[in-house]
Image 1 (cartoon, rainbow, N blue to C red):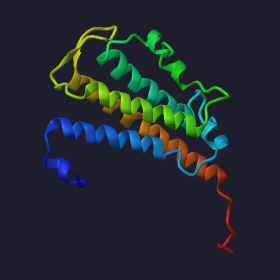
Image 2 (tube, rainbow, N blue to C red; image 1 turned 120 degrees about the vertical axis):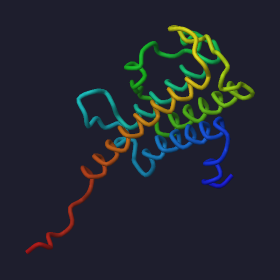
Image 3 (spheres, rainbow, N blue to C red; image 1 turned 30 degrees about the vertical axis):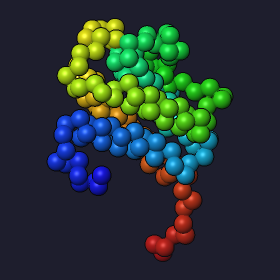
Image 4 (spheres, rainbow, N blue to C red; image 1 turned 60 degrees about the vertical axis):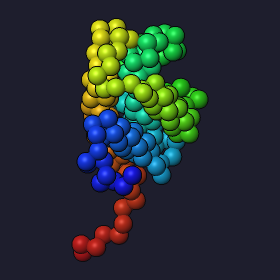
Amino acid sequence: MGSFDVLLDDERNQLDAFVKDGRSAVEATLDGLDEEQVRRRLVPSATTLLGLLKHVTWMQRVWFEECVGGTPRRELGLVQSPDESFGLTDDDTVASVRAAHQEACATASAIVAGLSLDTVVTGHRTGPRTLRWVYLQVLRELAHHCGHADILREQLLAADRVPGPDTTA
């Protein structure tokens, strides 16, 4: 499917395409950066580029595996709160967090395969909602965190840029 084919496609394919683009955009913010850079804290919170991807992975598992799939986050081995999901361990690397994200994306796709957007899902602790609502929530969160990641990447690249020769003299 070409990039413009989705413009005239059905709603489900459009939502899938936007989710896929958001997932790729968050991952791409890590491209070309080393392990120190992706862990560097540039804001007062615990937010880092690698932590953002870890959080986005957690978020998708909550919405698709817990809310749609019906498996409680404790059984999934997930931390309980969004704030905890940014936390990095010594074992977290770009490769491992990226692999976990890609696995969560594949699992999410498998869970929603065959479900209509009007399917009412009941796995979320605050009550039922439609699969369409879940897609919109995931898109909102992906857009939100893509913006954070873009800004953090820009800050990292600017901080690590070696100044060139002064040509104003």
